[in-house]
Length: 294
Image (cartoon, rainbow, N blue to C red; front, side):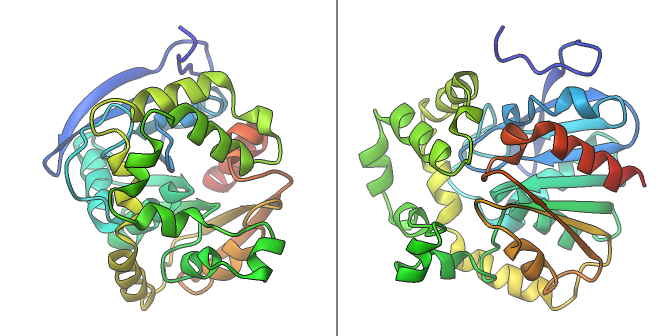
């Protein structure tokens, strides 16, 4: 099967389900050693990590869930704010017996992972944060239609569009493949990094019943998320934090942002666009191995 996720020995990762926080999540697991929780962004799924699984499973037990509403996880009507999704993920790790663990998230997965770290400061050993502007720390500023944002090619026009009730679902339904493949490729530096295999998987998961709604519900929680991040940032994270930015998307803004909510921050900048795990899987895996193992 073209959408298999393999470990470093070429063996398929195993797929499981767990009911956490009242929601049934699908997750993928492979490898051995200390636990590393990978949290995907929007509109992606656990399959987003398929290229780095075999680069990491020799060193870590990789746990990659589909967050609520995405992939093959349940799609409830609500609960798409950072705090609720963080509760899902923390409970999943508890059920799997991982009292303490490493943590990496990209895009909205980084925001969800920040919430996990902020609410479980004694459990997260180290935290890697990539390619995300947190609500309250830049997301809204980059969504404004300004000459500066458009010229800098980081105008996040979709933040406002996705926030509108019902309209995105109405306009995108039936055109999911065209919309998401075009949108994701536009955010990369190398459009070919978004393979047809990945597009097929992401589109499969958002074209089923209720598949589009959770994507937009994440954005509709922006004001609730703002209040959450502002409150949590009053007590800075103490665990080591690696912030990875893409030169051709958020750049080093993530590092500047992170120093407002974390004490121990180091940063890296990749020569790529927004989807690090697809555009630079070897470099990302090397960064994570070095950061978490050292």
